[in-house]
Image (cartoon, rainbow, N blue to C red):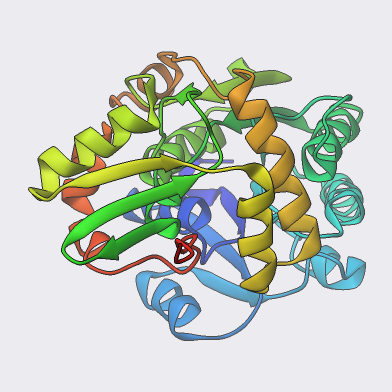
Length: 304
């Protein structure tokens, strides 16, 4: 099979990492089958870019099986929602039956057997499930995405606020665009990475005071980090209607974050993708419009 004959299946293809990987592969002349949950403007844009778009539910074995014929390598990404173990089992069986060669699996940095987060524990279990298949498998464990800053960002009276339960913990925010470059590179060259587990970090480890300072310097406005309690954070997320599974996950990873699980840096992104990851300042500059208004999940300050 020639390089141009390969077919890449991207799940979560309208998401940040899946969408980015899809576009990178298409730009390089490769065939991509984009698995999406619904036919909407985002999936139509992928089709216009040259992807073969397939609407399917990862929790439907028949639908996942129907998306596999001819696939050489696949990217598996499941949202932080119930059903990860079932979806991974369906995906693994369908991919094995179809003779798929390799898979890049999106996990998370807090994945481990004893994780307090149900989602993190399930990601660890699903890594082990995929390791037991014949697929060449590589697991990605990113720290917090830089995009999360925009989700929990509040813009109030010309100033910015990050009210989060992370104490004085530290991490190196990693942009989805950098992860997409890693995913595309691993799909194109899986042999050297079989059964590897890569933690993905941005270029500099920061606490949220440092992050607020970097955002402020880039936007030219005051930005404040206000540490809050985990209970206040969880209550605010529940009030906003976030699923119980996600709230349980976020509450427990806040503990992990304080305990250093999300900390560290590495040169994995540069080594695999050939390009250094974005700094917080670079990410903010490239996504400045996202900071013009409050994000959907910001924790409001209660009046005294």
